[in-house]
Amino acid sequence: MEATPHQISVELGEKEAEGIYSNFALISHSPAEFVIDFTRMLPGIPKAKVFARIIMTPQHAKSFLKALQDNIQKYEKQFGEIKLYGDERPRQFGFQPPAGETAPEQPDR
Image (cartoon, rainbow, N blue to C red; front, side, top):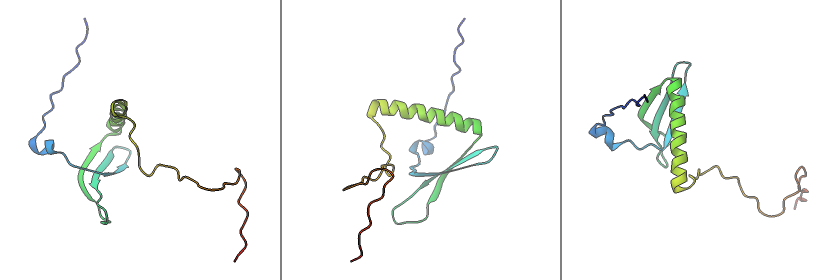
């Protein structure tokens, strides 16, 4: 006889269904828990307000990481690679000396 998976009923309230936009997260941890503060950064404002704080055990945090990785892989398979801005290597233009050598110094004018 095959075991049937447990079904979980999840209730989503009207307020929670609206969601909270976050474009910046702060993560900290102790031996007992991970704390994720979801914030919103706005251009020209050096202060970010925390809109939601999620606290979870290390085991739940790792399970969450695996679930997020799985969903990102599925997303990218369907829609293409997610580009991360700021991770690009600076492109070098002009003459570049061979690896390990430095360019000759220019005389002062």
